[in-house]
Amino acid sequence: MRGVRGKDERRISRARSLRRALTQAESKLWAKLRNRQLGGFKFTRQEPIGSYYSDFVCRDRKLIVEVDGGRHAERASDRQRDSGLTALGYKIVRVWNNEVIENIDGVLLHLLFELRR
Image (cartoon, rainbow, N blue to C red; front, side, top):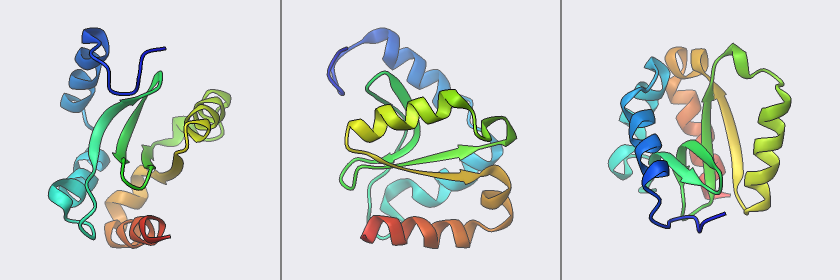
């Protein structure tokens, strides 16, 4: 496996395509996370980490935010992915699409709490 930030054109291309295909919930959350709007913490989106891609990550705090729809409910592959990212030192926070759309302020407060821990 390559380093976390090594030059790998295939991975870079995949990350770029994921950035162009944000869901409505991901777009709404990104509008609140970008440019250090949340407590001054820097986030990136669709970032390759290990062999995975995170929806959003604050590298300084090693916090990954995954915005999920119903298809992610208790999938074995998500548990394996979470284990792999946790082994790299990351904490994963999962929020549901409807939470972001219906209660963005609550989601942001929860993320800020996790970032300040």
